[in-house]
Amino acid sequence: MAEEGHIKAAAAVKALFPNQGFSIWNAEFCDLNGDGIEDLGLILTNTEGPGERSERLAVLAGHRNGQYTILSLSDEFCKIRQFYNMAVEGGTLLVTGYSSSSSRFSMRFRYNDKRKDLELIGEDEQNEDDEAKTADKLSINYLTRKISYSKNMGGKRKEVATIMPPQGLVGLQGFDCGTYDDKNTERYFYLNRDRPNGR
Image (cartoon, rainbow, N blue to C red; front, side, top):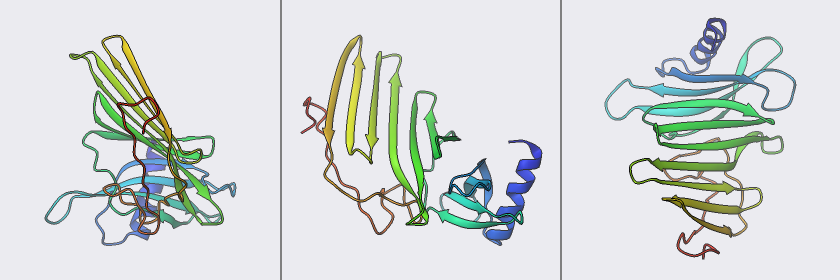
C-alpha cells in the first residue's frame, strides 16, 4: 500500500476505533458495497495487554465527504502466523492467510445489500509437503453448497465431492474464525475424505 493510502487508512482506524490500540496489518481500497465510492478492507491487530494478539477483519464504508463508517467487523479472525494478502476479484473481497510457505487458506466475502453486511461465500485450503510429495486442497462454495477435496500422493490423485445441506450464509459482522459462525447463522457439513461421494 502506498504511503498516502496508509495515512488515509490509519486516520480512519484512529477515528473509528479510538483507544482500542489497533494496528493495520493489511489494507485494500475497493468498492465492496457497489455505490461507486471506495471502501476499505482491513486486517487489524492489537498486541496490547495480556493474552494472545487480537485480530479483526474490518470493512469500512467510504462516503463522498472522504469519511468512513464501519460497514462490518468480525469478532476474532484467524490469527495467522505469517501474513495475509487481500484482493478484490469480481466485486468480492478475497482474504488469503499464510500459516507457512506450504500452508494457506482463503475466504471470499461478498456484500449483500439486503443484509447490509458481507457474507462468506467460499473458501479454499491448500497444504503441501515437499518431503512427503503430497498436496491437498479443500474447496467450499457456499452458494452452490458444493464441497470438493483433492489430494496428490506421489503422483496418485484422489478426489472427493459432496453437497452440503441447505443453510444460510454466515455474515462478516460478528464472524468468529474459531467457530465459523456469526452468532446468528451456524454452518454444518460433513465430508468423508475416504469416499468419492464424500459421505
